[in-house]
Image (cartoon, rainbow, N blue to C red):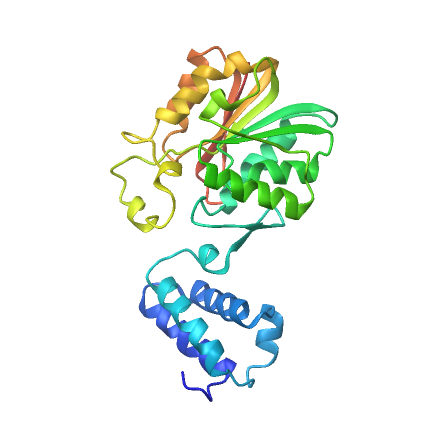
Length: 282
């Protein structure tokens, strides 16, 4: 990629670099376009509309290190500093998990479980704020509390709330239920907790993301079990607990919910067909 390289030639060569690193074809092309667009400060459409545009040396110097980091497996969201979730553009840093499309299933279920009107809702382990802010965008009458044990994550979430215009979301630091305001009962508690087993090979591919948000250790069920066992003390009568979990954990989670007195226990599948979210009513 010389000083005289064009946008089109740079995209082609960079895509080949990611393909050689093991990225699939469509994803490689998209990642390269987003990276170069980020460096140049233009949209994908603007980038692709002018493939003959010369790429200056300064832009190449900024682009190549990002390409190298992406080829090594670092998430695109960390490289460009943002990720879309529920049509919201969220700031993302390595202090938080990268929001994933399958987690939007929790937003869909939360909206389906509660009628329109005022409600108290808590997002436990909010990370970037993705769940809480998606719900805030859909239900202006809800009082939303978002918690996280990590101060760095809460800083990202607060920044996203301010940027997106949701100043009423209440952020609180602490571990799970300990962070909730005392004496308040909720209509809905939801969480995307760490649920990956400590020996799962997938953790290697996720090595750039905060381990605390990925795995609780052991078989990966500890946080899910803790959330189920502690929920009743914080839910209103007929309130709901809604949890994301691993593709093989639904049966165990349903059994835990029933054992702890929940009814209407059911799991829902993500777009890939995996049981990904389970809910129960107090």
